[in-house]
Length: 438
Image (cartoon, rainbow, N blue to C red; front, side):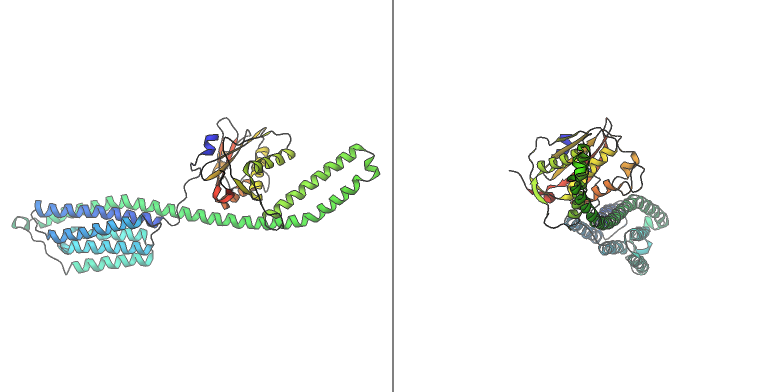
């Protein structure tokens, strides 16, 4: 466990970089272009030297070289880019259409069976581009195909091939259709996966925005409730203070003890309300303090033990040096929520495990309770997902996940091999740490 807490391994699925689908699709287009270049060169050399059809080899190889140079520049650009706009994908497809048109012009125009490759460009545009750009590729392809039926360089056939032109056209058509089918299956499926991953990432962002809006509403309600409860609690504290000095109470030690317990409970309630107000930024003069991590977590553990004396809570900090941190009350509340959840899950003991690596502070709460169900693990961090079966339950873990996410960290949950649950918080030291220990 100590080694796991100290590693920098990713604990959550990698998130899709913002709008990275365009970059991946441009890379796929460039890969497709390499296949096209290789196919063009092989076809040109085979047709010219093996079949005896005299082609302008120098001009056609020059066109292929230009395409290769553009491809090299594309890959070099993609290494420095995080995204590619649809307009750039449109220009890339326009370039491919013009490249194909040039090669067809030099090799028989519309009589060349490979003119059907325009359909591949249209299909790619239908997946990658918006509506108007797709029709742009369609119109450009139709215009180029129509032009090739009027203006082109005729094939220079030998006398032996003149009578076999139709057979050659049928064979070329079959090869072209086979190429289109294979390339569509290979590349369209990969592009579709890229777009699906992008949509999943955007859906995750929308879900996160909805959760944050939910948290804001909850914060406003909690802040309002804290203000409203403050007055009656203060009045109750005054009344209990008066009771402690009444002869009727002081004459009965058992009553005096019960009044003391009531005062402790009232004071605890006031501390909780103060924590709510601090977290919402409404309490003045009580800004988060700077403290060593060990002291901060031991204070949380001691406070939790005082209200839950029947459950052992062990702290293990491992053989690490820790920097000082800004003791934000929201971190305290997140850890307290995890401890409370472990208690409510039927745990008879709880471990608070602390570790670190070069970039993050790792805090885990492990218990021997009933653990998480498969459904709970799948819905971990979503509001109102709970195994307690009570109305309004399930907000504790939801708040923990969102608090840690706001700090730039993440939360993961799992079940232990021997039972119980483990929830791990990874907090970036760049956010919560004040300075590195020397």
